[in-house]
Length: 131
Image (cartoon, rainbow, N blue to C red; front, top):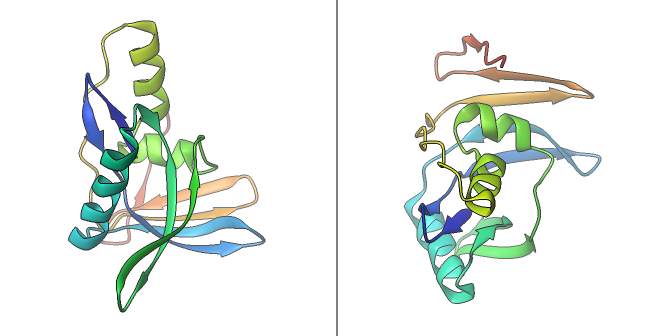
């Protein structure tokens, strides 16, 4: 989640799998219950900046188990998909023009193997998102 007065609230929901404590697979999903839950957390804390919220979707709805006030290891993947929180945070703090929010595509998947990352679209086509 990224939030500031200049851009509002921007989110990305990743359903992920962990291996040895790191995200090894993720899929960008749309979930109105989670989105609403994230917005309630942002508003409760009057967030100005970025946080990484980890939660589980239970039969009672989303339940947070960790909030990290830092950038996470999926930074590069998020940036390539469109949630460019580091760029927005730096731009906000340096008072320069903030890059537009490229709305992410739901269904995009990514895989991480040691230092390699692969991103696929909804049709399982490899996406080349080199800078």
